[in-house]
Length: 140
Ligand SMILES: *[C@@H]1O[C@H](CO)[C@@H](O)[C@H](O)[C@H]1NC(C)=O
Ligand SMILES: *[C@@H]1O[C@H](CO)[C@@H](O)[C@H](O)[C@H]1NC(C)=O
Ligand SMILES: *[C@@H]1O[C@H](CO)[C@@H](O)[C@H](O)[C@H]1NC(C)=O
Ligand SMILES: *[C@@H]1O[C@H](CO)[C@@H](O)[C@H](O)[C@H]1NC(C)=O
Image (tube, rainbow, N blue to C red; front, side):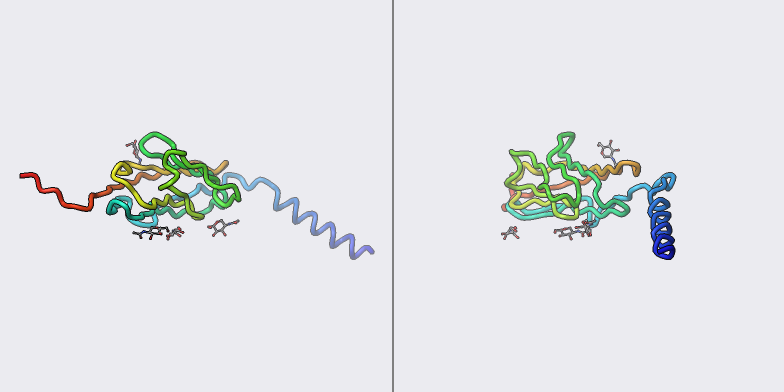
């Protein structure tokens, strides 16, 4: 019985220690997993890829220009919230990357991603996407 209680106390101490504040936590790190300048043929698919560390369930916001177009909390079961007018093309993959399926020319532009984790700060990255037409225009 005493042995048992000792074991229990030891376990409780471990739990309490694990719950103690660890001081300042490591800041989250965010980087592009591929090129930050992408080009794609109209109608094609492309992914603006991110990789990150030290953040298992950070909140992520993808913007086109200044407008938020997709938001998600990584690893939640709720689906990403996508701009309704762009949802036929845009998606967020499980790792937070922005996916385009069947892009049209008007998806060209500057995109940015912002990742935030309470206590670990905010990180942002910029991308440029160019969608080019199927035919080469020769203007004489
Ligand atoms: C783009 O992705 C969609 C859905 O995954 C697929 O059906 C289609 O074949 C892909 N298109 C190209 C050009 O790879
Ligand atoms: C993220 O997921 C997409 C699609 O599932 C995949 O193409 C890409 O390689 C992944 N990126 C990383 C950094 O794992
Ligand atoms: C969160 O998602 C990433 C990418 O899908 C996965 O590797 C990781 O195991 C997940 N973590 C948790 C705690 O579910
Ligand atoms: C991203 O672009 C914005 C607006 O053009 C700029 O203010 C910001 O410094 C850029 N951030 C990075 C990390 O390059």
